[in-house]
Length: 181
Image (cartoon, rainbow, N blue to C red; front, side):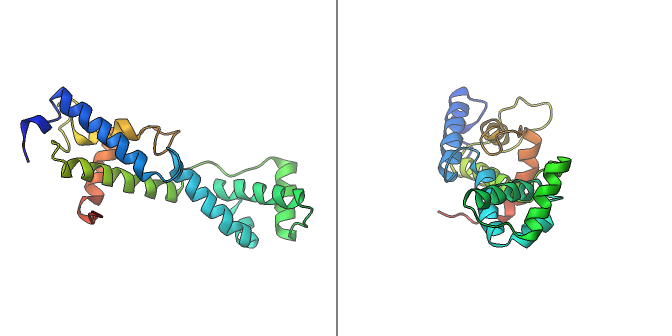
């Protein structure tokens, strides 16, 4: 396991691990880089389109539900379909006040982020790369550093994913990973 060629202090090993991580994360995103948010929003949108009362109930405090309510209303209007009373009242109130929920990280986004981070770290460890983490004064040459660098802009496009986030996520999920291969 401690093969010198897989030590991430070796520049060739670091570059190989970086490229493998990028390839791995791309292969695990089903549509495009950063699709966890798009996928979760699409699934929620389809669910909420069928459950408009639930959608309108959540929309004032959930920015994804708010966006879905606008899209559902626009689609129904374009198709000449009537809006439900609840959806019509919500949209009219939004148009009059411009009030929308505050943005925050959605639980589904964080779940996908954490799963992909954990599997990427696991993948590199399985390939024999080391060390997994580092101490605060070491050079940033660990698996968690590489995953952070690759994942930034890929998993959640508008968020930086730093070493500490990857390390904490790995520490939280390390013993929960069931190797799919």
